[in-house]
Length: 203
Image 1 (tube, rainbow, N blue to C red):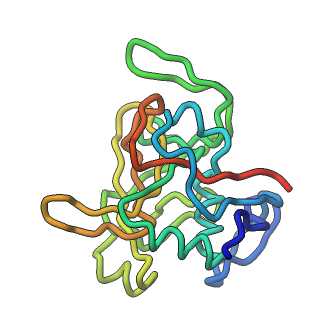
Image 2 (image 1 turned 90 degrees about the horizontal axis):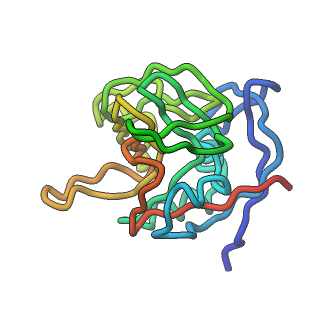
Image 3 (image 1 turned 90 degrees about the vertical axis):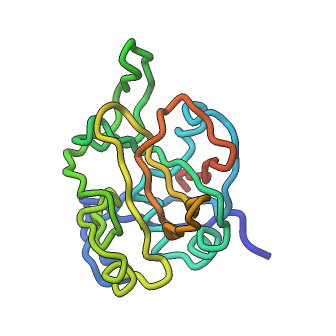
């Protein structure tokens, strides 16, 4: 029987630590992260506050076999994070609120990081703190680095987009994008039938 939640000590920039693959990082705090995806088909704006940030999810994916196994096996499904990409320049974690505007949406509050997204492609390096892709390259390079969990990254530059993790494939060409396929392409207020969220709460 798989546990519903996994207790995990997540790194950040405030306290140095070591990721499972030997990369240095630091400390976010102690969280319980759900091993399964829930809230499927609900509006993203209604469920993002209970979801992990991209950094928390990436660390849990690397550290815990049950979370990684769940992500690998659930083909055709995905989950949102509580991290957002704004205008291809800023990563925002856990914003406090959304405001609809004529041009889309704006957020209030949250932790903001300046980022420089790499080109759409196969991820060969992630940021230790935010979990955001730092470098992309050829699929072969990603497989050499991450094995069966090698995954693609795709983003839209203009506007505000919620970051999702998916395990999906192109319906026409049957191209698989990996179990940690990251997309910053969804507007926060929409819903996707096969995308939900994973629970994340402080212990």
